[in-house]
Picture 1: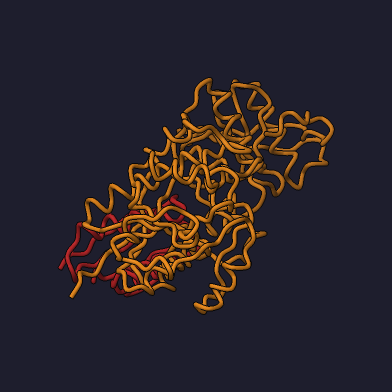
Picture 2 (picture 1 turned 90 degrees about the vertical axis):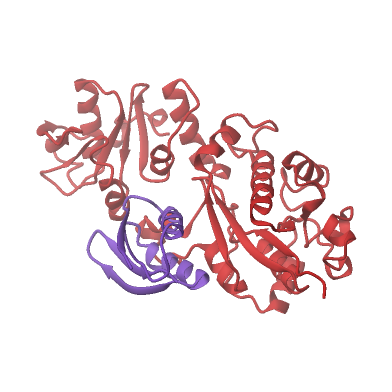
Length: 74
Length: 347
């Protein structure tokens, strides 16, 4: 099981979702991906994308400038 | 037992594609969604950059549609390939820079490639005859089927009964009698069907789902091409056309001034790529300078930046100018008065 980080800063949705989708395709079930973004829309979209595609959101973090979503590949 | 057929539905996030997909799912077909991202798609998030739109839901409507339908959604980045569609549209532009017919042909063509790669049987779209002036007309719908290469693998469930029979109908994969005969710009049949399916809170974008149908956006794109002397763009270009006031005092440079905090925050991400400035003696917006400005041009940009800050009525304000390498200096300028900015500078 591996943990990887995806930098999706500066991208507007749905690009962070597309980058997440493409990254997850290269990972194994149980792997963990941390996606770091600046578009607040990801807080809705990446969890929605995870629900549709059977992945699990482990945590979401927000600070002043960044939004981070940690997911487990399903 | 007959094989379960598989269809891919072009999901825009609007009501029609949602209804088309559900109509086919109800006939026992396995449906997955596909959504193409051109870079010009209007998303709640793009609007959400601006504070005034904070009340709008930030959801991606294509994802929302897929979730309502309980289907997978494949979002495909076609930004690079789409450039040729926009720059050289065989069928020309609509009222603005929208190459709707070429766009639809291209997307159906990509869907055709996708079904071949993924062993799906046919393609469905939410098109309705007469719904759109360019791409959804009785005479252009066969053009889409033909030029995309999808031919009779392209099924439009909402108006199929008004069109020649397609392969899925002829082969009995779907029952033509249970498809629809919608036509025209009216929305009543769609609303009734949405009600029947129990769909609520669906997106109904008034100006379509593409920035290229927007006059203001199209004007900025044309200005960009005109200033560069060639039709080309990259993703950052088209993202930045969505934010700020765009003011072009001369061909060689343009100033983008954030209109509010949300835009300033978004533009912060580009500070290393553009000369940028803000007022340091008063509260004021972030501004970026695109192009190749001279030192004199930067003073014009500084006066513009000052105009949109709280020091607009001061005799002098301090403007801090940051170069791309991070070095900075401060200049004193007199803010432009509103009548000193020629109207033609505003893009």
